[in-house]
Image (tube, rainbow, N blue to C red; front, side):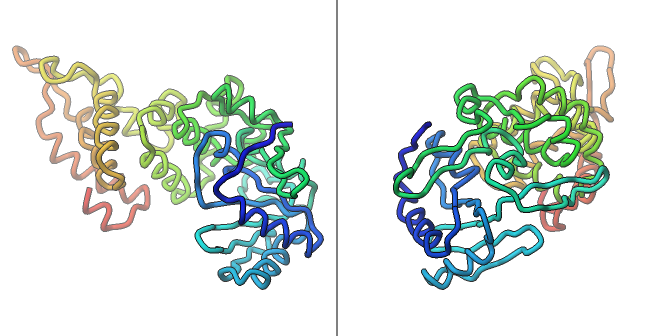
Length: 330
């Protein structure tokens, strides 16, 4: 069993364990915090699985250590609070079952293994003991450590069921692959291409939030390429697909509009974390496919693409439910 070395966060984990002993529940650190320890990434967010009443435990922790206010979501057995610089989320161990045309799961209490199995990808299915006798020891029922080593995104259960139950996980797979520059495991990728049409049941706001996170990554081009190659962009952002294969004048650009755009987005991403600037870079040639004309002696031209592009930007922004100030800025 792997035992992780914890530097940042050790004291808060010890306090959570102390409260767990007094409240008489088992508590494990889980998910992204454990994953990031493997990757050498430090953060201030920690998720915990409580084998028992997570909301009651969070309230007990709040009283014991005078933490920030507890924000509870009884339907999901979830509670969040802040303690000093830490953002803590406590979730009762649970299983989930989805109806065919809904993203709202039926929730039941469960054990740790069942809770880990409901999670999206193996790299997020890791739990860590916080008790003194086993502190830092990792529970890894789905070989998430190996997938981190192999740089793979893979679902813990049947990927077709995973993505059919919760299609938003399709976009999360792309985002995690992009964030860590991991590959998507073959069967998982096949399931993405075959269940992508179920994205239509996801609200536009949630799709846009995933897209925003992808675009704000260090190198968005990898994720944007995955969106195109998997056929997802044809559903959520068809204008990106239309740029692919559109040739430009060779003396100015050696790549088609799509790959030129990816290069521009990556370049500006090295200079700014502002979403609107990155989004503007993504859309700067969005109207070239519609204005492409071949002129004898001159080659391909795109007269008027700036004016048409400005109108398209507004339409795309409204479809994506972006705030009005963001649309106007772009």
